[in-house]
Length: 119
Figure: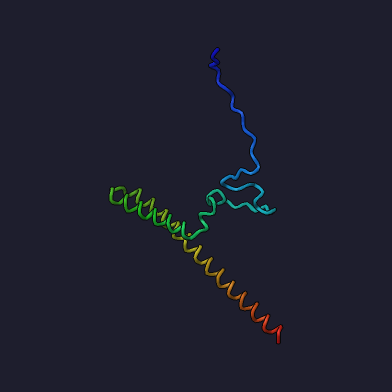
């Protein structure tokens, strides 16, 4: 006997070790901070300067290709994307410079504190 009736969808129970792309709800270490750009940054890709630079170059190349095909609207669109990623890259580079200078200052302070404590 053939049953032509459609089956209802049954959801499967979620496994505990399953990792979602956007992270789990409890990954914020107890803080209730809600960043509006959490869905934009997938797997930390926007915090890696190398990935941001590659993405910027990709949009620059797409703009060149659109220019050669004669689509000025698409060229402007791609250039705006490239500009966004270039600003993001500059922001990450500034942040990295600040972190490096803070680390140098803290290591200098620690070495000076050790010298004064031994004297």
